[in-house]
Length: 236
Ligand SMILES: [Zn+2]
Image 1: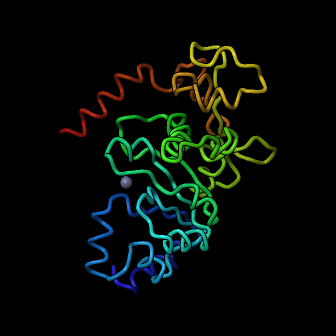
Image 2: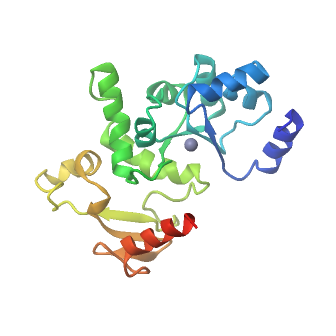
C-alpha cells in the first residue's frame, strides 16, 4: 500500500480494531528493509498506523525502536507462543513489550494446537527457558491476557470480566479433573493457567447464551465430526 493508502486506511478504521501480523519471521523484516529501508513496525508508524485500536500479532523479531513505537502508541500485542514454537520462529520480547506499555493478548495462529490455556502458560514458560528465572507473569496476569485484554483487542472493552452492564461472555473451568484436582481454592487461577487444558472447560456462555453445558456443545451434536468435515471442505 502507498503511504497515502495506509493513512486513509488508518483514518477509516480509527474506531474499529485492526490486527496485523508483524515481524513473525526474520525474512519478512529483511524484505521490508530491502524495499523500504525500514522495519515493518517503523514503516507502519511512519504511515500513522499504530494506535490503541491496533494489535500486532506475533511481534517476534522486533528492534528496540520497534518496541518503543508499539508501546508509545499503546498498541496491543497478540502473542501466539504455540505457533512460534511449532514453526521454530523464536520467542517474542513479551516482557519488554509489556514494560513499554503494550497490553498483551493471546492468540492461536495455527491449527496444530488450539488451546488458550497452553498459549497463556507458554508465555511464562518460554521466558523461564530463556532466562532460567521463574515468575515473569502471575496466573492472574496471564488469565487477563487470555480474557479481558483479548476482548479489548477485538473491540469489546466491555467484555472479559463479570460485572453489571458487561457482556456475559465467559467459560467456567472444572477444578476436579485429572489435571486440576487437588489445589486449594485460593490456587484456582494457578491450577487453571498451569495445569488445565481446553478439555477442562465445563460451561461456556456467549452474550448470555449457554453454548457449552457440562462439556457438551449445545449447538453442534458431534463437534469432532463437524471439525473434520469443515477441514475436509477446505481441501476441495
Ligand atoms: Zn501470522
